[in-house]
Image (cartoon, rainbow, N blue to C red):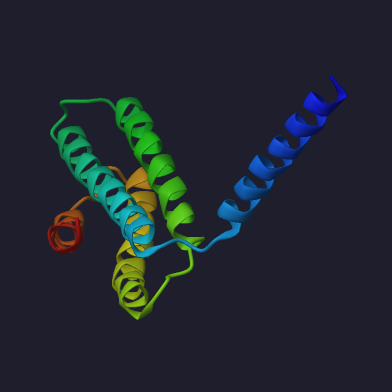
Length: 141
């Protein structure tokens, strides 16, 4: 009985130790790129949604409350994914270049989404940024 408890304790210690080790390792290229693409896709989708919702509001097809709730959900999801991406250190020079290309677009996305939340019908600048994110996704997804 005692020997069984010792074995279980040793196995549990090894498993927990491996988990702690694995969780402290920097991301590999695949993980970094996947996280970047996920953040870019979320920003892209939130901007497209903001554009469509703002246009519909301007045309009187939806209410301000509907647009506010819709934008809030997309903005929160995008902010969460951008934060996750920003916390990852790039594993090499190629991924550092990818980060340097994407970061300004993500920052602008959050700024534009914030602007759209306060002025939902002011969506004229969103398509150009959405196109830049589409080009990024075409190259990296």
